Amino acid sequence: MTPKARLTRRSPKAERAPEIYRRLARAYPDAHCALDFNDPFQLIVATILSAQCTDKRVNMVTPELFRRYPTAADLAAADPTEVETIIKSTGFFRAKTKSLIGMATAVDAKHGGQVPADMDALVALPGVGRKTANVVLGNAFDTNVGVVVDTHVTRVSRRLALTRQTDPVKIEQDLMKLFPQQSWTMLSHLFIEHGRQICEARKPKCEVCPLSDLCPSSTV
Ligand code: SF4
Image (tube, rainbow, N blue to C red):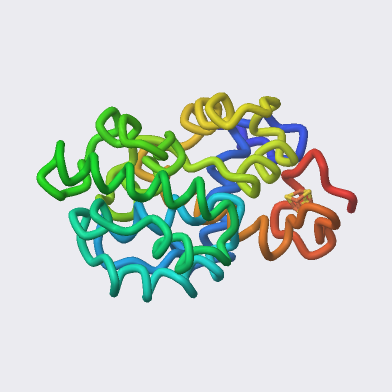
């Protein structure tokens, strides 16, 4: 039997992918959803608020929001001005308020107040796209339907040459082909963590990166 060829940064992406996952899982054993939530409703609200905003900032405003509006019915009936005041620091607060109240109204009217655990039903809710739906399905319902592709996942996947795409939906399709379905939710947590800690946008720390020998973009 011939020994297995050593993986390098020139190896095909399908061969590098499992080792990339293994190393990131070892590097970030505590990777998880950084948004605070106790149920699917809280997570969908927090995810809508996280657009163009840090998770840390979202976690600062959600306790008050959830205290004032604990259910979809409560948020559906909210005074928009009050919601805007609470969420103002997350940015785009008028559009986000519209999305939150629209989403809550639909959840209350069409789903009996329960966030649906279904991709098609989720993306039909106002203000909910595939990314938000993937966050909710993966983290509140433990269902791996897709991969959350945010700015970190986009950057890390492209630098690792796991995709050449720039459109999040196409990047997601490439990643879904490379990694087993049961790992999809954790995959995005790992890439996000790696993007925050090592593979930073402006100056990636390739010299301390555990993937540098597998990464075609490595500077070392
Ligand atoms: S080697 Fe550099 S570019 Fe590649 S994943 Fe690591 S930090 Fe990012």
